[in-house]
Image 1 (cartoon, protein in one colour):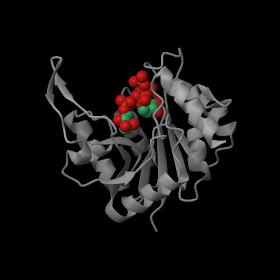
Image 2: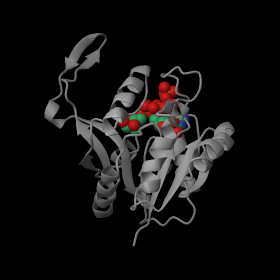
Image 3: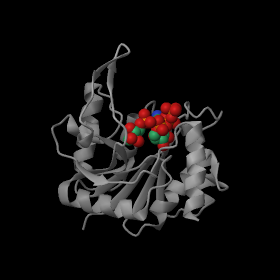
Length: 231
Ligand SMILES: Nc1ccn([C@@H]2O[C@H](COP(=O)(O)OP(=O)(O)OP(=O)(O)O)[C@@H](O)[C@H]2O)c(=O)n1
Ligand SMILES: C[C@](O)(CO)[C@H](O)COP(=O)(O)O
């Protein structure tokens, strides 16, 4: 039976949030954003172990203020991050102890606190069946490709989806994709894109519009509203 590992990159700088410190520690209902996220994985029966990725200098803070404070017993290690998200994920993948190629890894942004147990279960089932699956939602607006301030193209909306996380993979597949991208100096903005460039299929699991990545200040307003609605 494949085991399921969660890998949560939380080693960004939160530059677009402009909070003056890492946005994953901003409080939502008195609890750091990243703790809301980890809690969903801690409580999900389908997750066996969690690896967190943090800026190296913040590892002691993350351990005491997130892992120990909230009793996240599934967290096996806090791994030092890299310059870009992809580097942080690659560091995390290399740090998972005793993982087998057929085990599953669910990669999930530390700043997407509205992930649900249902999304985790659907991702696990899809990756178990096909090897690779991401959560995504259809775009609601019309999307334009713009070059030099002028519209170059209007892609058919029916084909456009917004990639979210979790992104779930058989470990052997995503490890090979990350190793190859690193060797080629390729930087993608999500993990699925590293498999796509190898011509490997990635399934899509329908997510939810509330599964936002908290990126800019207005996302905090949305997050507070979603949290109020959940209560
Ligand atoms: N070098 C990096 C960059 C990002 N992340 C993580 O990847 C997730 C998504 O990244 P993003 O929202 O872009 O976060 P930041 O990089 O912190 O934001 P910014 O680009 O505004 O600095 C976050 O949980 C972030 O902590 C990471 O682990 N390591
Ligand atoms: C992985 C991701 O959350 C999917 O939407 C996104 O691509 C991360 O991008 P960012 O540049 O780190 O914000």
